[in-house]
Length: 140
Length: 157
View (cartoon, rainbow over the protein chains, first blue to last red):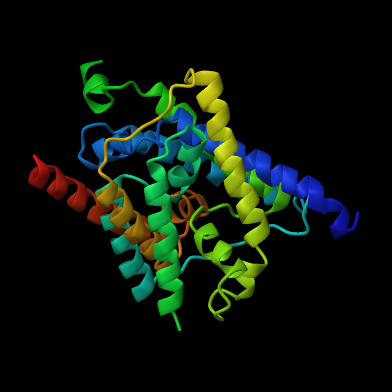
């Protein structure tokens, strides 16, 4: 099958995968900034289970799937996204944490929260979009 | 039992199940399309539609901006299904003040893009592929987030 023929199924697959992700975020109440902030204040350790559960499944998939399949079911190759450690990663992560500790919202829940009618999260979503814009404008 | 209740006063099952579902979403994306589904890149790649500066016109943004938006739309749909089907359609609301959402959000966006990842990119996908730079990134943002949230709680108390 040519790449063009796969575009629609691939879009649909991406939509369904995103929906599972968003459903999981909501089911785990991560779209409530209060729950995230109570984790950051050591009052409720639920976020460790959310992250641990998600990492476990992803770890298995990233390890096992490429061993069983030569290529993804609807794509040409398994992507890799190597992370690097440098000054930007350190500074960026530190700033991200300050912002996250201030509002209790990270990028996934900022998007998903809209689906549950949490319009206040639009403020966070707008802030994130502006922050990403500012970062890109400052980059060379 | 008491320990469980003190660590997870609101229960623990929904956290674990929710986490497994989040992981399944990212795993399904990988199985079907081979893509690595972090969430913060969409905030840079979408600007490439309207901002012509070379930074935003990089291939990694332009080539992925379509599917990243679809992935984000999926996130909204998934939350909608949960809201209508499992939460009785009671509208979610937050008591976090607007200035905290806006300023915090700005730092989240700036920082995640500068550091090339957020709680899903470094936290789930990066740790899921056993990359030590992602582990360092997670430890860094957890540390500054713990600090900020606790200082804020003290000041606002």
